Each structure stands twice: as structure tokens, then as C-alpha cells.
Length: 361
Image 1 (cartoon, rainbow, N blue to C red):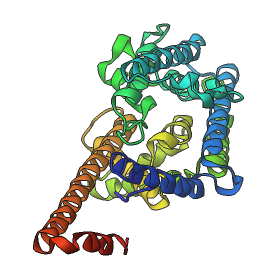
Image 2: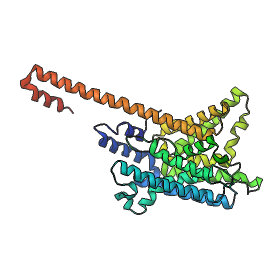
Image 3: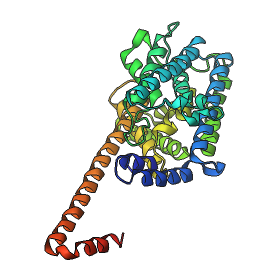
Image 4: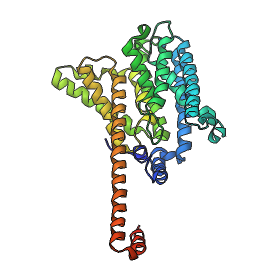
């Protein structure tokens, strides 16, 4: 996959020039994520998180009041509470293990809403898990999915940046669906309370809100474009090769579940690349893996495909990091050997040779 700004940060996180690389990456991220908002990267991320959490909360509340979400009303409450509690415990343990100050108590968290902003990703994970899991009157599937998703942020993360590798909501939801924990299953309908002639309005409204959010702050429209284009492409390929009707393969696009997944899951800013080309490849790859899983008869392909693509991206970054670190060490050793050889040949001119070697740098 194409390397992006955060990927370059991960690749150079442990090199001698890590600080300079981080500053360069942050400049790149500023150009790629703020867009028309004109905000700094940190402020853009905070604003995006707040609006994402706000829109997801609004959709959840309205979904239970108007369209008729099938999940129990306590499911999103349990998911959000579990996510925040798990984040608090895990961050405290991580800070204790590495002898550092917890990030929810860091100086940046002392700013207006800083501590609240720290818990927003886990809050969003809990709401998303509650949205895509149905366990009847049982809340344990949502609680388990949220715990797995939030824990994955600490277990699977980039060494250089500390950012998550796997999409938390997709990881938690896929795990519970594969285990069929307490009969957990995807919701059958998200618009059970809306008459059929009017239920077609919900998907475009959700997509419109999501596109506006990602276009203005997160800069993840290329991910959406790659995902949408890839989904159409895999549907056409399946229709040509397997005899499945292309219209049937494209039918999920018209559902509310697909719109919610597109807006709140696949375009997660923390687990997708920053570069535009890399974003398109990421979205298209997710759609391609989903199509392959459907052909193989694997259930819950949407979430499994996203987890698989995130894992492949993380593995590619790990390999890239190791290769670059080895290359840097080899270059340093070669330079040291060259200087030692020059000193051995002409000991009296060693300082001059060293100065001459250092001057072009």
C-alpha cells in the first residue's frame, strides 16, 4: 500500500531523527486532514471527534425514537459506559507500566474539554458496537464487543505513534459475531418503525451527514470514494464470474446498515491512512476483501474485511519500519568504518577528513 503521513511517522519512530520526522509528518497531516477548515491537526482531530460523537449520539437517539432500531434502548448506554470505563482502566495501567502520566491527566487534557476529548474514541466505539449488534434483551454482546474493541487499541498499535492498528468497532463487532456470544447477530432492520415508502429516506440522510462531516474535518472522503467504487466493482465482478445478479449484489447499498457502516466504521480517522492515494487503496481493498468473503460464503464480511485490511496495513508498516531501521544502521556502520579507514591511512589528517566529511551535510 502507498505510504502516508502517519505511516512515515510509524516507520521512523525509533530512528535517530524521529523528532524531525514527526514534525514533518505533522505538517503533512495538517495539509491532509484540515481541508477547508483551516485548523491545526490537533484541533481538527478534536473538533472531528466531537462532531463525530455528537452526530452518532443524535443518530442513536433518533434511531430509537423514530425509525425503530431493534436494539434495546439500554444497549448504547451500556456500550458507551463500558467503553469509557475500559479506556480509563487500560490507560491507567499502561501509564503505570511505562512510568508516565496518564493521558487523561496530561497538561493537554487540562485544556477546555481535554479530558472529555480523550474518552471520545472509546465512547464512539461503544455506540457503534451497540448499533451493529443485536442480542435480544441481553447486553452482554455489546459489553464484550466494546471491551475487545477498546482493548485492541492498546494491544495492536504502532510502535512509533502509539495509534491503533485495527479498527476498534470492527474488531469488537466481528469477534462477538464470530463467537455468536449469547446469540448475538446483526440487526435485521434499522427502520422497523418507518412505513416502507418512506424508509428509503434514511440511508441518503445518513450518508449526507457523514459526507459533510468527513469532507469538512477528517479528510476521509477518499476512503469513502475508494470504498464505494470498490463495492460497485466487486459487485460487477461477482455478477460476471459467478452468475449472481449485479442488482442483487448492489442491494446492500440501499440499506441503512450500509450507510451507517460507511460513515461511522470504515472511515475511522485513527485507523485509516492520511494520504489521499493510500485512502483510496484502503477503501477499495476493504471492498475487494468483502467481495471475496461473500464468494467464499463467510458471514459478517463487512467487519472481517475491514479488520483484515487494517491488519495487512499494520504488517506492512512493521516490515517497512524494520527495513528502514536496518538500512539506517547499515549506513551508520558504513560511515563509521569509512572514517576509521581514513584515520588509519593518514592519522594526522583525521580531524580534517572528519570535518570535510561533515561539512557537506
